[in-house]
Image (tube, rainbow, N blue to C red; front, top):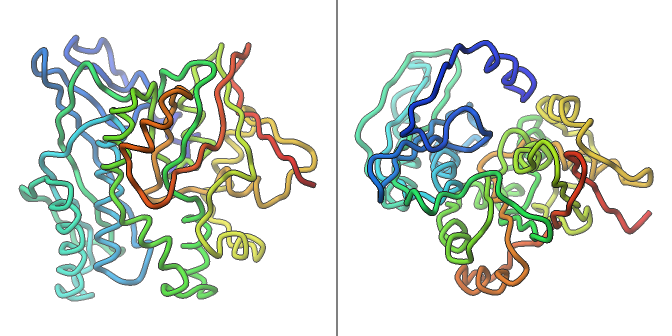
Length: 330
């Protein structure tokens, strides 16, 4: 569902007053909810599932599970338990379903969580995901909002999964050619989350269906703070630019663009490709992290990856709410 449709639905819910134990709920655009159990323990909860993004059932299970677990990590939490959510046509055979669940279970175990059960429905189209419960220190919750002027914006995974998966479905790309993106989508955001906490990150969210621009907009308050993105610093999975040039844009990219264009300032000479990648819906994307410049070395040292996540922009004071795109070439 696109951001505009979701916003319309949420407006219709008679939510009433929230309980005081709800530390993070529906009143903010965060990745998961947080319920206070006691002064030292918050319960963080999320749910996510979707249709296959790759043909290999085991890999699909891995990606779907990593995507659901990511919301816990985006809040600075640690996954504890998971429940499978399965919609599956029995005509495809139980061996295929078993492979999907095995892929998901591998990622649940890698996260240090425990699978407790789940729910299955006979459906015409396969869908798989998880409901995940985790724990978080109430004093160290990573929220989507909290960045301050002067903070750097770090992105921990490349972009392009929406474009690449569209090309895969259209047989313009093979899974072998898409392997770097498949590996990236199956990668947990656990280490990036821990490093963000250690570095004292001011804000965090993950990049999924609303695309880079959509999730970045959730990091900005209604007024007082904007963010400048440097187009040429955006990390990309291999083949992304080639597939975009062939028109392999998912329908969700157009929904994201139509909803978000009022908040995005694009230079006149910006390549069409960068317009596309800003709104490309991602699956199991990386974390967007707001860090003080002084904390960047700590973040990198804690992360200890062979590749360094990209600094793609910075926050600055502003009258309104704006994503400004900087582009040097052209």
